[in-house]
Picture 1 (cartoon, rainbow, N blue to C red):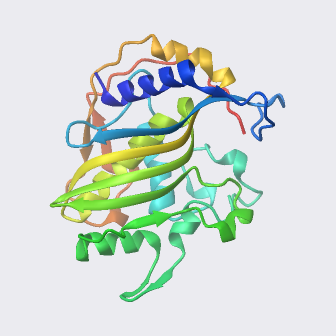
Picture 2: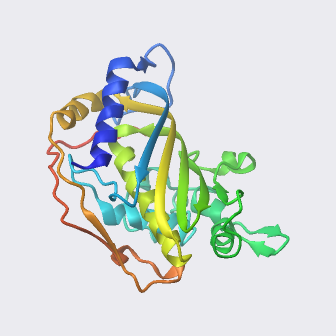
Length: 276
């Protein structure tokens, strides 16, 4: 069965059994009817995914893999902060009348900085170091720019990635300040697993391990029945990731450069309530 399912289900069981409720505190998120969206949470979750063994995709529900890749490319490749350049509508609630989400996510990756070797944005600096300085322990990105937080529609949740090369293997640590387990966990894991595969391929490396560190792993109150439904299911085997092997330039990837072969999954009939 899929390891991504096992890690998700184990984390959810831990949250529901040992988590702490925030019902005694004022909270920012609201449901569509204006009701406060409270959560039960645990602190400090660390999940490890060996990308050489399998690609981490949940099978207990259908995952929109290409939409997830499309958002990742919107942030990391287009370095965009405008929803009109994104194929899905997941950011619509946070955009202004022009489609901008402010100085968030892709905007931060596209800002150029001066280094001894020249001027790079954060993505190009990672690509440069993976090819020219793979032994570096400084290959990382950071979206949590305190100077610009007041101009962000939403503070970044998945806010930093640290890359590390061991031999010819690329590993990464994804740091996340906050994780809505039902709507975002499977999405973020398969996104950043795909990113590791992409960066490894164009750098002449092989994908190794993705370590996902979550500070606040939580389940919303109205999501609990859906999570319990998922917990009662038997996962399928993980699919196999196919990625176009001819691509050697990170900026040539598209969402159609990928597919999941042999993907079997359960369906989730009920709509998922969204807190904003």
